[in-house]
View (cartoon, helix red, strand yellow):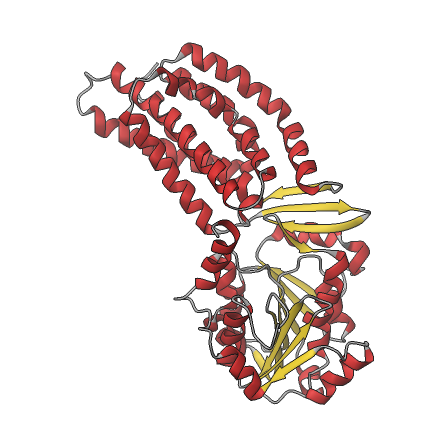
Length: 466
């Protein structure tokens, strides 16, 4: 066996370990970058510990549980929410990284007489890591999770560890066979009575379509993006109500642009309001699976000429079109991650304004209802970003929808028409804020910008730290 095979295989496995962490812990971490940064440091710490206590037999035998990483990581989501999930994942990253780093030490002791062994070892590991990422890119995360244990066994064998390699091979083959059973157990514990009917891991997120009490739910990275008991009203406020604020001129000039498809119910509301709709969805799997899974709720037809679905990044879409829209709806998850937070930024609102009809309306949800005439840590910065770019805005706070919605425009908005629509639906108890009162509410907050994503940091802090 060529001496370069061992470090190359080790590099591949280290990359695949990171893919396992990303693919399995997305639902526990909600796609937020903070936990993954902690895990990246944990992987480096594991390497440091391995070299500090080089040659300890216990470290080598940690390869055995490392072989089962995919199954063990799948079960971490049932740990109580909060910092304990990060703590458990961090400990696992340290131990598994330390056990794999021992393979480098074994290789070094067998090839210490090789000239320039350290640069060669490092270069081969880096080449293997690059190859591992290429493998993950070509195969997708599912095969990586299923066969990760076998990859560990191969790396152990190529580095001269025959007995541990054989044990890892048997365990890896067993995990490949039983991984679905482990995931089903984890899902049952996490969702209780819910049945996970469809799971997809994409380059952007983990999608889970869950049937609970006979009703369909959509979870994106562990966050409920569509709950039929609450989201029908949410989508009415987000998409249908702002369409009623449009002038006849804006209505006949152009249609609606909806960022994010999800359950397609927001698009149904737009079409029912009489506007043709273009939906822009970053993740094509969300668009495909969401349309099929929630057909019973939206009842749309893909052949409908009024409906157009584009798979593209929202920023790229706006930068490559000159079309203006009468209504633009932001139907995306809460900004746990920086990529989502950028869609709530002042800069993105500026892009939206440049593609909005002069009498058009942009609709944004703020995350929580107004309490005691004050905005919260999330709703404040989001509202300030919108208000910074639009001279006219109306905020509707609904206790029933458990959310607030901000409608903004370059032209005055018809308050009387809004009140009439709410009264017709029996929702005239909603709170309305505009003008100087709205400015007073957003004044204490800095807007979300591409240089200030503190809103995501605050969400992460409240979720995982204290």
